[in-house]
Structures are given as C-alpha cells and as structure tokens.
Image (cartoon, rainbow, N blue to C red; front, top):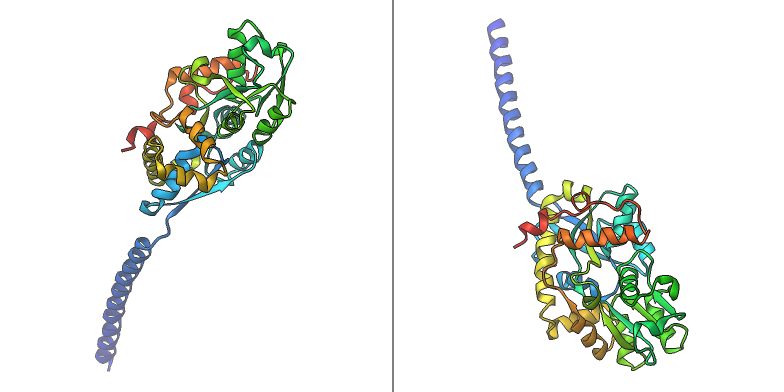
Length: 326
C-alpha cells in the first residue's frame, strides 16, 4: 500500500514538472509573439506651417510608411509660445523651432538637443517700395516675429553694417501672418520673418527684397530640429530612424519639383507664385549644425544681451544621429 502511494505521488510530481516546463515554453512563445507584434514608438513633432519646416512635411508624406520602429505624428501649432510650451512640458517629443527659443529653454533647464537644421538661408528683409537702402529705415517701424529669433539677429547685423543700431528704428514684434498686410497698409516699413510670409508681400508688389540672409550672415542658423533628450536616450532606434528619413526628406525637398510643391500645398495655404519665390530663397542642403556657425549665433546672442549664458555647442548640439544618417 505504501509502495503504491509512493509510486502515485512520484507520477504526479513528474507530470507536474512536465506541465510546468510546457507552460514555460508556451510563455516564452507568447512573450516572443507579443514582442514581434509590439506597437511602434510614436514620436510627436511640433511645427508651424512655414517653408522652414518643409523636410518634416516631405518625411510625413513620403517616408512614414517605411518606418519599422516609429509612428510619426506631426502636431501643428499656431504660435511659437504654444509650441515651446508643449515642447518644454513633454507634450511633444521634438519640434522644428526657432533655435534661439530652444537654446533659451535649454538654458532654463529643459533638456533638449538640436539634432539638425530645418533649412539654410531663406530669410529676407522685405521693405516698402519707397525704401531704397538700410538708412531709409531710420525712425521707421520694423517688424520681427520674436526678439529671440535669427530674424532679430539679422536685423541687428543689417543695421550694424549700415552704421545704425536697433535704437534707430522702432522694432516691433508681430505674428508672421500679419506682416504682409501691415506692410501693405503702411503700419510698418519692413520686416524679416520665416517664409512664406516675406514672399507674400513681394508676390503682390507690396514689398521688395532689400537684402537676403546670405548677404548679412553666411551660413546663418535659424530653425532647428530639436528632440527631448529623454526620447533620444529611451528610444534611440526610433530617434535614429526619424533623423535618417528627415535628412533624406531634406534632400528631396531641395529638388523643389512638382511633388514638393504638391506636398507643400497640403501644409501651407499659399499661391504658386508665393511658394516659387519662397523656395527660390531657401536651401535644404547640408542640415548638419556646424560648430563655427553655432558659435557665431551664441556670441551674437550675448553681444545683443538676449542671453547671458546660452548653452555651448557641446551641451546643446547632438550630431550623433545625423552622423549616422544614410
């Protein structure tokens, strides 16, 4: 009787172990099955509907279906303060943004990294038809979108080159969309802003180009693609995939062909003539942020008393992703 009980208990033990091993095997298969169907990372990128963010539009239209790691979600904003607030509070993972605003956020403790430029050149000083040179702007109203902007720096350099200072003109901040109308109505005598708003006034003969950014500051740094550092660290494969396609989108944008015009029209409501002008002035070649260009920006911000301690190149610029982009 005791021998039979022992045999019975041994059989139960062997059976239990066998079932346990089978269950473990099933669990491993289930886990691997979940892993293989795991949802992609979603990367939320903020933007304003301007020509300077064109690589984002191209990437979203042509490349997002090719992503293996990532779902790209573009988030449209109506103003820089709205976008920066969302970026600083982590509501979005990155943005195409005025680099000076991102630098200020970094200076204030928000851990952002600039991983690429949005464009090169593409900023113009547009003035009333009766303004023939920079000295004619003395005592006049001149608009910029934000004091912390490359547009303000370009105005500073333009006036300095002509022997004037910003005290010689009445510098006002205006929303970009209001600038063409303000110029046409005579409320301002000129402005520098992101495209396509400069081209809008020129296309309807209410303004003319006085100088282009390349005339004032070669290789100027303006809009940049920034990512929250925590996203880069925690989702590095997704960040790399996103930047890979972003660089490729910039190369495609530089062709400025019919497909690029078609894509642009989905994100910006502009006439063909306006878009043609805007794209004529801008470049999407070589979107890497170079140290000498960044240092000039940083030094000028200090010179203009716009920032006391802007982040250094090594603190703010992360080229690790763009260096690996194919």
